[in-house]
Image (cartoon, rainbow, N blue to C red; front, side):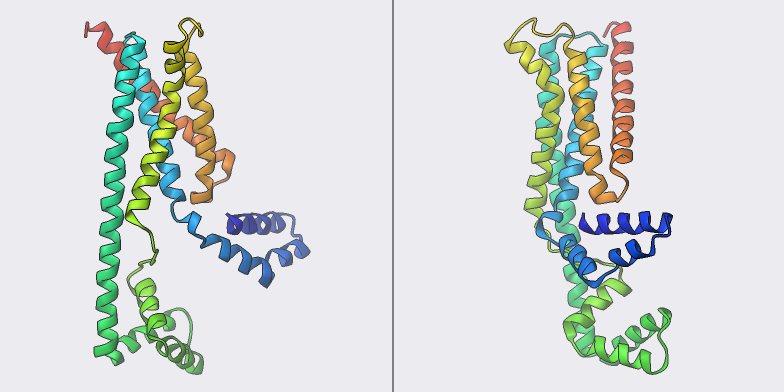
Length: 267
């Protein structure tokens, strides 16, 4: 998040050709602070939370819209809504768990292979490092020095091979935490489209149009969580929020139309 703020300041400074502001965005202190913030623990699971929340809202409100389109009772909305909330939420969490675990297992296996090759065929691995930095523009003594620095530390050597040769970013994520974050976000955000119906069940006739209230709550939540997505994607927050609201509206409209057509067919 801090890195994105720094980049945004740099972009704004460039637009106005403000050299002083550009220098401020590129001081050592500012850059180090931004990079430190970028690697903090809380950032690891932000993507899981955001996408879990978005999926929860979209799928649950799609169910609500489909039932509304078919003109079924509020009890059906709650039954199908909560079934989706827990069924899809658990499914998504398990899928995230297996995906994260598989990715980490693969990274671990590749790291073990690279480490073994460094131990057993160091000259070949050193040549790979040389070619990697040669492509980056290093040559002569600079290239020799770069190779020497990288290969003087085994961990740094292996890390470089993992990133530069294999394109693998080593991230110490916990599959269980990732899954729980996804499920929690899915369940909490996915409950919002059902909130108005739950309140209407407890307090009958409190709303003249429960579906409309649900749509308003969901729209606000979709825009808010969509704006949070900018922390992951780097897109401007308002654009990200509008995009998510647009996508959610399409899904809800399609579900409403299907429900309406099925009702018309006598289903």
